[in-house]
Image 1: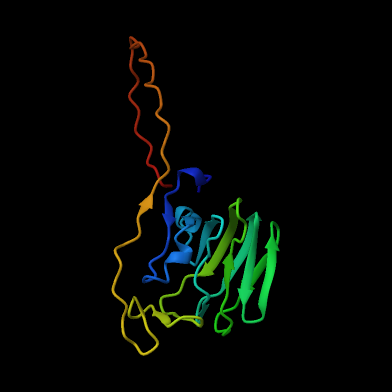
Image 2 (image 1 turned 90 degrees about the vertical axis):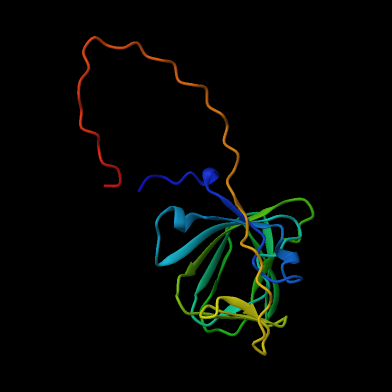
Length: 189
């Protein structure tokens, strides 16, 4: 597979959380590196947290392992044990089934933080959000209250690709007297 041009990947902002739980994560964005690389066993995202943004609501998964590596900036990792700073080069793992809600917060007033997120891709998972009245069951594919009442569905999150610079039109070549016939190469080998 060829090198992935990260800057050309679509950017997904915000979350599918119901209001008001979506507000703290409205200024987060992700580029799905794993999808771009054709990876199917685990997901890889490049997460950008603008100043004040959260990575998610505090949560834990029954069947999905998660791992984060801080690429740049500084974030506060919040777990049941409390808070600790993670700086560029620091990392943390969250094994599936461990009932320890976690999330990252960028408490900087001026600088974004960038993290690499890695997580297992599973068909069936149950996610609990211990600080709020919300759960997510992949079998239902909807956010719900702990009593099972579904939250209203939100429209799909917008994915926008970065603006591409316009290229100058290529110069026309002069036709050669003899043309060689070639068989086109198949892509995707």
